[in-house]
Every structure is written in C-alpha cells, then in structure tokens.
Length: 236
Ligand SMILES: [Cu+2]
Image (cartoon, rainbow, N blue to C red; front, side, top):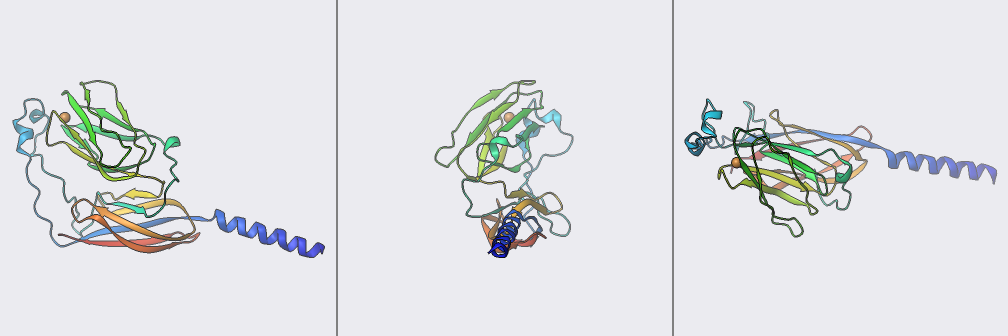
C-alpha cells in the first residue's frame, strides 16, 4: 500500500515535469522565384518635409529578400490557439516613424499588448490604424514632431492590421495581432524563433503579405529539445 502510494507520487511528479516541458521552434523562410522589382515611391522626394530626409530613392518593401532567398517580414505563428495572450504583461511593441516610413513595416503584437508609436521625424504624422476585425477600434491621431509616443492596443486577433498615415498616403505598417505569445516575424536572414512553446503537436503557419497572404501551414511537434520548421514560399 505504502509502495503504491510512492509510485503514484512519482508518476504524478513525472506528469508535472512533462507538462512543464517547453522548447523553442526555430526555422527559416525562403522565397522561391524572383520577386518583381520594388517601385520607387516618388511622392516621398516630392514632399517638402519628407524628401530631404532621404539621399536615396525610397522604394516599396513588398519583398525583402536576401541573395539566397531569405525572406524577411514573414509572420510565423501557431494556429488555433485562443485566449492565451500574455500581452497585458508584455513590453510594448515599438513602432517608429522615420524618414516618413513606418519601421518596422511588418510586425506582430499580442491582444492587449501596448503598441507604442514614435515620431522621429521633423514632420507631422497622423497615425491611423484601420482594423477589420470586430472589436478592434479604428483611430486617427495626429502626432507632431517631438510629440509624445502614441499608444494603441487591440483586443481581437487580426492578420496584417493596417496602420496608415493620412498626411503621407504611402506610409503603411502591418501589425498582426495574435491571441497568444507563440509567434515571431522573420528578419533579413529569413530566420525565426518562437520561444518556450509547451511540448505538444501544433499547426504552424507562415504568412507573408505578398507571397502567402492567407498563410502556408505545416504540422510541428515540440519536445523539450524544441522543434524545427522550414518554409518555402513562392512568388505569386
Ligand atoms: Cu506621415
């Protein structure tokens, strides 16, 4: 009887350890094919305030891709998880307006996480998130040079929520709102790391605004050693 109880305690402890196991999902997103050349945004140099902030032509940022096809600005996240946001406790996502462009162009935040928008320009901007999902509020807020950072947050998951500027019609930023912390956005080397994913089987999705706007999915199993996921997206 005593032995059985000890075994039960050991079994319970082992189960708790397994539950607590988590790992990182790492991987890379590669673009197959040659993307169309980026176009110059001629309005920038024609603008009295913004033109002088650049010495080189400002171009669209549809495909930020390396020599080996490494694809930036891809949102990679676990699918089908809701109500797990830790956004309220997370550090704000920082977005800047510099040279009359939003930086970053593509990013992601959690539901309830603060999104802090800065104006580093000697020009006025008008920060205008225009969400599509129910519950996410459209706002339109002027921001003068040297003005305080503006803060936004959204309660509903939404892919590529568009921020625009009503003063400069070429300015866009796309922020994907996720209802859990298991996401990442690829950098210029195409890689991503989704940290501390509890062990288990998931569907992981990679979304790129031009190459995979509705996402490409694959199955992934996370163990204590983590998991790997490689994506190849095609130019459409
Ligand atoms: Cu602007």
